[in-house]
Image (cartoon, rainbow, N blue to C red; front, side, top):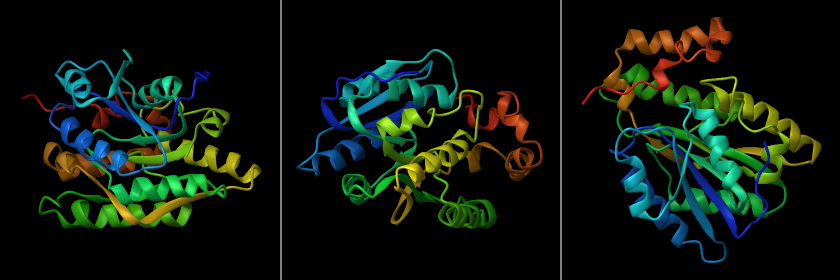
Length: 250
């Protein structure tokens, strides 16, 4: 997999999207506002239509995003498809149900521009705990602790250098979930060879949707957490990773 080389902007924000019409508009509004606040760097937004059957692609175009199509419904493949057409020197990967602040985008760019940081991620909070303390409050806190301690970026927000991204072999298309963990490990190795840091920004957590707490019951969520821990090979099966791909019937 090779990137295009016609860099015409400083950074590219890539959003993989599968049937995200209920979220994509607000996410893009916030994102374009953040980009407009950055005066000395130019950015673009790429929404990867991952075989949507709703109005996601239309809404994204109306908001001003570049839309590219990836027919195979797989998160890692969609992220890689966006990276391959990105025109920026730096890449940001943001989920279609995740809000990032102006401050986080600016701080991440400053880290990359400073020359000592090769990339990283951010801590994460839910937009609501849905009255579920364990999964709604404790688990995001616990994940953020893991993320900071072991320098593992959540898929909801990752920033990196495009050249190093491809040197680290992108996101593994062998995985249907958890690809951000493997990517973090591989990318950190590339950063170490270049004497660069991989940082998890704590100051401005991203706010991601708690919708799965509504869509799935606690037992299903627990099953989703435990299966990869004991059977990591399951991440290679879309059937076992349906938690990340299923959408409720409207």
